Amino acid sequence: MIAQQHSFTTEVRWQGSPMQASERRFSRKHVIEAEGLHPIEASAARVFHGDADRWNPELLLISAVAECHMMTFLFLAKREGLEILDYRCRAEGTLALDADGVGGEFAGISLFPVVTFRAREEAGLHEETCLHDEATIIALHDEVGKYCFIARSVTAPITVEPAQRAVTLEN
Image (cartoon, rainbow, N blue to C red; front, side, top):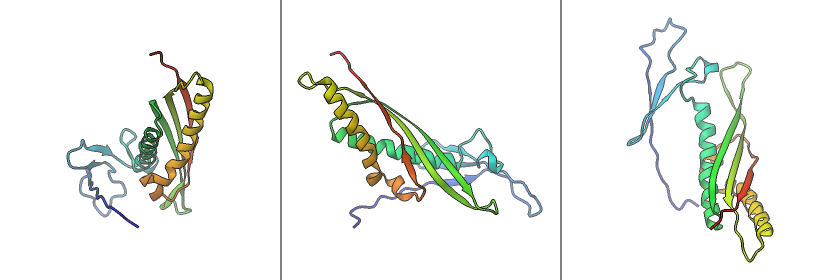
C-alpha cells in the first residue's frame, strides 16, 4: 500500500549538431539538469563512442545504487545509535550485452562500503561492545535492501561486501 508519493524531474538535453540521415557518427554529449542544481555534463560510455571525461548512464546508475545504499545505511545506523565517522563505497557494475550488441542489461552491481565508526565503551566492555557494533553494522547493510528506493527499483542483483573499523576517541 502506497502511503505517499514524491515526484522528481530532470531534463536531458543533447548537445550535438543536427544529424544528417547519411551520417554514421553523432555526438553523444548531453547535459542533465534539474531545477536549482548544477548541470551534469554527460555522454555515452567510452566503449559506446562517448567521451571518457564525462559521466555516463552506467556510472550514474551504479552511483545511484551506492548513494541510496549509503543514505539508507546512515539513517538505519542513526536509528541504532551508532556514531558513524566516515563512509566510503566503491561501486562496480557489469553490463552484459545482447548478441546483437545493441541491447543489454546490468548482470550485477557490487558495493564495497567501508564504514568507520566510533567504538562505544559501555561499563568497561569495550571489546564486547565493539564486536556487537560491528555485527550491527553488518546486519544494517543487509537490512538496507528492504528500504533503499533505488535498489528496490533495479532488477540487477546487488551484492554488498562491507568492511568496517572501530575507532576509539579519547574524550
